[in-house]
Length: 120
Image 1 (tube, helix red, strand yellow):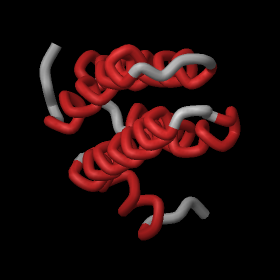
Image 2: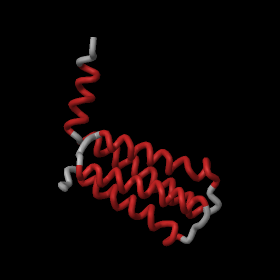
Image 3: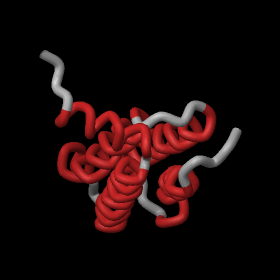
Image 4: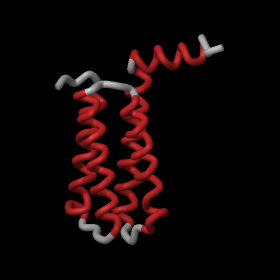
């Protein structure tokens, strides 16, 4: 297992925070389970980035970040701490995944080829 992008380490830490945050911040109910579940998936995508480095895992993290941002309103969180935690964590997950995409040579090559050499 090799760290190719430092952003994967940050994503792993964000995922761990999401798993622990309901207990640290004291919120309960659906917000707890949604936050823990999405946190576990963030951790899994980050670990996948260590094992099989690919820009595709970043797209999964972006989707998870969007889910974290939308969850408080889609589920109806009862706690402002849960809402703030979910939105801020989701935005950070999106930020670091996007940052990694923009610095990943494999993705940059794919993106360049897609737009400059379209299939005919």
